Image (cartoon, rainbow over all chains, first blue to last red; front, side):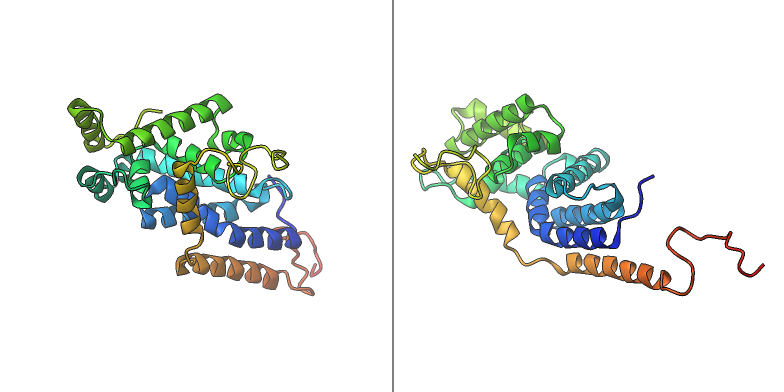
Length: 188
Length: 82
């Protein structure tokens, strides 16, 4: 059993916890899409992290440690709770009824909707790499080999481009619509 | 190109160096992320931190000097009152 933290280490830990809240909320929002669910997820993560503080080695990568806790909790919750296994109904509705803004440049709202059609694994890999996380850190946080991380990023980007470019033909529309209604994102 | 020393992904602004092809998806992803980071922190989070601080100050009170309790989970072998 690990020793309790020294008072100074605990004070540092608490300060690090405060500082990471904005990034934690951003990562949670990327995974969970819905703002309330994302904030629940982030708060659960803070509670778990505090409870596990004695297991964190001071001076090691705090952000990676926190992000790992968050995504583990997210994927565990998915497996248990139906509401995470399908797309948020509001988002699904928007995707079906609001085609992306064609020819007018990329709107953030469109990008949000496009992201929601990706698998969570693709989404998190894309967000982490674009916000500056080094490759090996992404692999560590997502508990995946480097090749898998790169593949998720490649496929995620390709899926986003398909989403914005619009369907090639009618059959494509049906495939995409069917996938959305079935509540599954793109395959990994 | 004097800015090429950093490996991609380690800079604050993301991966692109100046002069690279425009990447609206990458820019958009970063924007989505920083938009959330820039939101004011909701009260629920601050309440959590308060709860943590309360827990810590209770621990300090229990370990106050002169009581001989220490923080080792309760020592019943001191025998001072034997």
